[in-house]
Length: 405
Image (cartoon, rainbow, N blue to C red):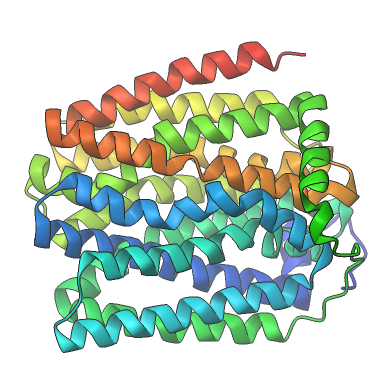
């Protein structure tokens, strides 16, 4: 995969978009992520309408993150040895087939929450592969001088998709139902796979030794523990996914119970934080000079958790959405630097494996989703989300205390 010469006099984003490999990978990520968030919102809405239980919704949405916890480190090790482009395409093809199956079940009137759980597992396996394959390919296509800007721009696009996906999901759920939403998703996944197919990708692969995978994962863990920036990334990733992002798992319950919102209104609530992240992500992508460091990452996470606690207690949906929009400024810093710090502090031969460990930390999210769902059923969504956010702030303090050196 060739990279263009870096011109410090030009803005980073135009240089990235003139790179054909980066452009195709960026487009594929945008399409796939949009459908991921559409899928999650539609699955949550259908499950809550059918069961009336926030815990049931959290179970269905937990399925998407569970493979990240169980398979993240393994996916990173495999991505060091197997063709990353093919791995990425296989994941996109599997998501298209699964979405088509859900659409058929919905049209036949046979769709049940457990079908959506299985669909979530398939999507989770593809998502597990995403960080160690496409994100690394994005950085390789951009070249060493534009890694942080490339990751920031890609994260900004991810924030855009987290905003657009729920909005489209709420609209399609109201207008064409579950079957129509998943038919759209299947088609878009196939377009994403076609975009990746056109990427000219070369990689230096390690020999695949199945018996040595555990040793290679352990070696990556030792590297991550030895480097303070990498320790910080892994610890903060756990805090953010368990105590912060878990609120998305009960959005249908939060919006319906607290604000009596329609599906489209819930989509607006889901889109607020990504919109704030979009604004900050664009600023990071356009930034020149030295990359932001660890303190920016920690400040962004702390700011988001504090604002999330306030948003949970907001009396109206517009105020809650506005607060989440402001909180998105912090999640943008987290999304950009989570990957950027790994790619700039980890040795090249271990980057995919450490990204795999990061994916495993992301996979702790189901623990938070399940806990939050149980708390929401017992005490209501407001108190549950606020309590988890405060616990996250405590967890952040502990991580900072143990990673100062």
